[in-house]
Length: 81
Image (tube, rainbow, N blue to C red):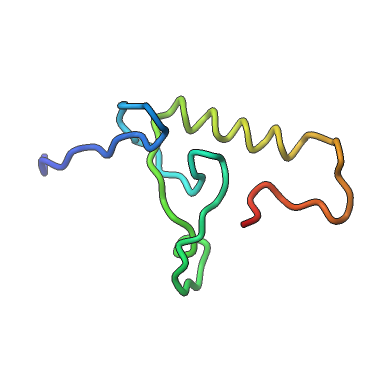
């Protein structure tokens, strides 16, 4: 083993290992890095989550996407910045 420690989950108040890398912030949105980027992979900040909190965040995103209320052609996507 290299001796590296597993990063902690970025979800507030969670001390579990953050073994899942995600582009979703703890609020469930994509956060731009502010740097010049040429791909999605470079453009957004990376977070680490435990499996439970990553699942919770993904459920929240899908619930926002699937909720039919107040959607029209001008609706902003949940990943909009």
